[in-house]
Image (cartoon, rainbow, N blue to C red; front, side, top):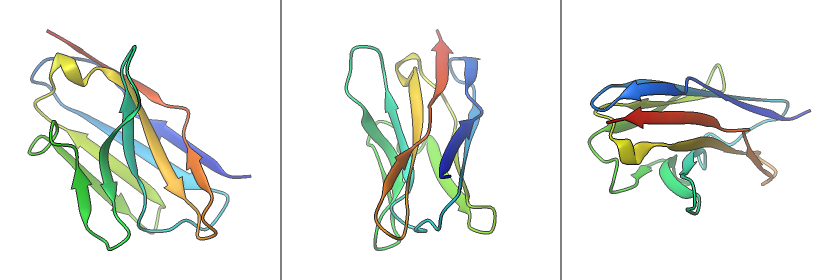
Length: 116
């Protein structure tokens, strides 16, 4: 059974930091085409950071210089280090993983709330 599980969300004051983790299991996942997305209340889900098919990293303009995506291929885990958090970063953060067969999976989401 495929599982994609996020953890690490919480409540933090503006300017603070959080690290999100995501572990995928139950299949063989592509090392690329994995990433983080977020959805704020009343808004569409948007890309935060992803590993692209050519191995590069793509960040949303709003998080460049503040967020860092990384991964541990042995553990099949990816991370999102979030620094200098702002109230507008408040959202449910979702992990996305793609199997080598091309099936797309999402985690259940983890809430990040940044207070001003």
